Amino acid sequence: MNTTLIAAAEALGEQLKARKQTVAVAESSSGGLISAALLAVPGASAYFLGGAVVYTAKARMALMGLPREAVAGMRSASEPYALLLARTARENLGAVWGLSETGASGPTGNPYGDAAGHTCLAISGPVEMAITLETGESDREANMDAFAIAAITLLTRALAD
Image 1 (cartoon, helix red, strand yellow):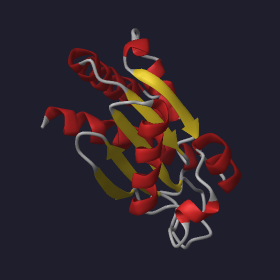
Image 2 (image 1 turned 90 degrees about the vertical axis):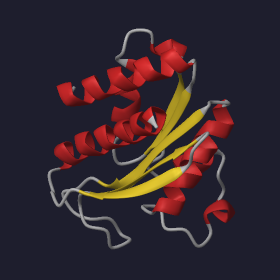
Image 3 (image 1 turned 180 degrees about the vertical axis):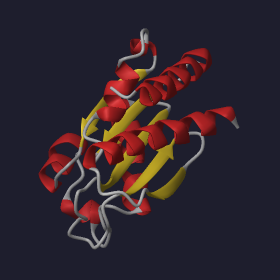
Image 4 (image 1 turned 135 degrees about the vertical axis):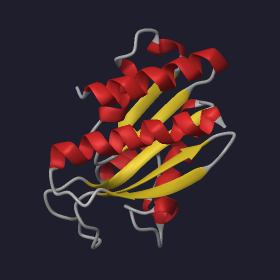
């Protein structure tokens, strides 16, 4: 696993432990890297409640309990969808924070017209926000790493404020 990703997860883990706060993750094109990085930190059980790779509509329904009606009019690789995933992960697991990622890792774009390297990230908790990241790269593995680092960094920055 990428050392930058592990370092970011360690920093976030320390902040969550110090605040006695928890996180739940819903991720898509990062393929579980966000959860894996957070779980690689010793003592992760103090803050990590669970995560899901929500890569398909079937997974969204089965793992998140979100039927088609809940996402009507919403594009999956969008900020509103990322925020819905973060809120749902937080609510479903009773976490202080929900963290989500949804995008197109590459090497090509997604069916919604987003280019490879596009992702939307969101946090839901005491503060809510969603952002869009465009790496401009088609390298799938590099994008997956970049998406996971950006998601963990987003929550880290929110905790620092």
